[in-house]
Length: 128
Image 1: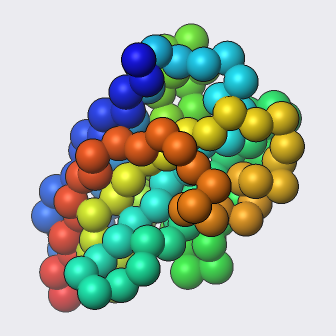
Image 2 (image 1 turned 90 degrees about the vertical axis):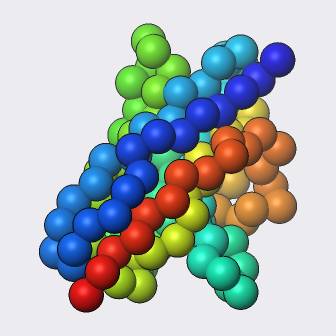
C-alpha cells in the first residue's frame, strides 16, 4: 500500500524559510514524477514544484521560481521542498503527490488530476 506523509510545515515570518519533507512508503519504482501542490482556502489546488526522477529535471511554478527548491533522496524515497524568502501569499496547505510515469511532460504540467497518490498535507503560515 502506498502512503505519502508530509512534515515540516509551520508558522514563519515573511522572509523566513521552511523545509518540507514527504516520505513515500510502498514506493513504486515507476514513481518518476513527484510534485508539491498547495491549496489555500477557497482556491484551487496548484502545482508548486515537480521533479521527474527519470532525468532529475525540476519544474517550478512562476510564483516560486528562484525561492523554492525541490529535490529527492531516492534511497530513502523522500521528497523535499526547500522554501526560502517566504511571502504571506505562500500560506497554504502543502501536499506531496506521486504518479507512475515514464514521461517528463506529466511533471511539467503539474495538473492535480493527473496524480493518483497524495499525502494528507502540512500547513504553512507566513505572517507579514
